[in-house]
Length: 133
Ligand SMILES: CC[C@H](C(=O)O)C(=O)SCCNC(=O)CCNC(=O)[C@H](O)C(C)(C)COP(=O)(O)OP(=O)(O)OC[C@H]1O[C@@H](n2cnc3c(N)ncnc32)[C@H](O)[C@@H]1OP(=O)(O)O
Ligand SMILES: [Co+2]
Image (tube, rainbow, N blue to C red; front, side):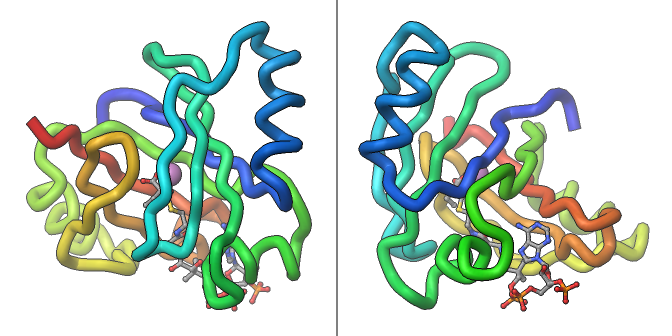
């Protein structure tokens, strides 16, 4: 893991939060994208070394919907940039972490992603991201 790729924030209403974070950062989101497989629509701010990802649920079954129900709006996950997600998954599994999807899946912002169960990482949901070249 080389650096934080993005911090994911669960929000109830993406449009409302886009306006709020545009005031905070002084710039609009540089990208908005729906990831149907995750039941989310997202917007990305700060197109640099550390990004902010806002996520709104698009289905009641979405992990974001469940999270909002249980915990309300707030930091949802921390994503780390990895060079080779397949070998990183194998390494983490050998270290005893629970990888929620052994096969990397297509995420937002042109990435392959995988997640670790928060129970094994002191209550913090960790996402691995590999840039699709
Ligand atoms: C891919 C697009 C985009 C990208 O960057 O490319 C994204 O980031 S998409 C983000 C949304 N997708 C995911 O989060 C996928 C991984 N998440 C999951 O598989 C689930 O959310 C899971 C397994 C973490 C929890 O699902 P479950 O059905 O078990 O929900 P529960 O409410 O029963 O939770 C069990 C237990 O975990 C705690 N929990 C849940 N979510 C989080 C979280 N984000 N951070 C910390 N802890 C979390 C929850 O509180 C429960 O704990 P307990 O002590 O039992 O109350
Ligand atoms: Co993410």
